[in-house]
Image 1 (cartoon, rainbow, N blue to C red):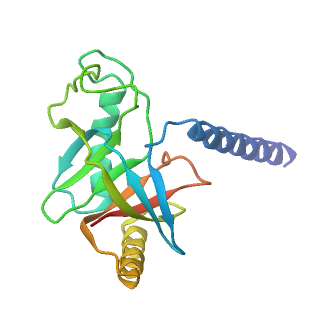
Image 2: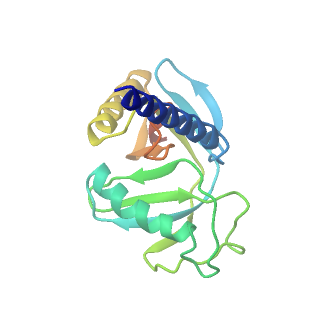
Length: 195
C-alpha cells in the first residue's frame, strides 16, 4: 500500500512539473503582434497588422474536424515538411475560420520569415498568405475550446457589439493559444472584423 501511495505522489508531482514547464515554455512562444485599441467591459478592440501565415482550406464544418485536418498538415510543414527540410518555430495563436462553404486553419509564421526566405511547403494544399491588416473585436475565454464554447462566446460578442452600435463583417473566427496537453492557463478567443 505504501508503494502505491509513493508512486501516485511521484506521478502527480511529475504531472504538475510538466504543466509548469508547459506554461513557462508557452510564455516564450512568439505571439502574433497586435495593438490594443480599446478595452470594453466584456471585449476589446485590437488592430492586427499584416502577418505571414501558412493556411489550409477544408470543407469541415466543426471546430474538431477542422482542427484535426488542418493542424496535422500545418504541423508537418513547420516540422520539416518543406523544401529546405527546415524546422520552423511554432507561434500562437492558431487561426480557425469556419465558414458556410469553406473553412481554413492557419499558423502565423515567425516574424523572421517573409515571402523570400520562407521554405516552400511540400504539401500543395498548404498556401502561404499575407493576412489583411484589420481592426477586430475580441472576446476571451479559458478552458478547453469546443464548438459549444466557441458558439456561446460568438453570441456574447455579437450581442455586445450590437449593444455598442459597432458593425462587423465576415465570419466570427477562433484563435487558440495553447497546445492540447496544457491543462491550466488556457487562452481562447473569438474575433470578428469591424467595419
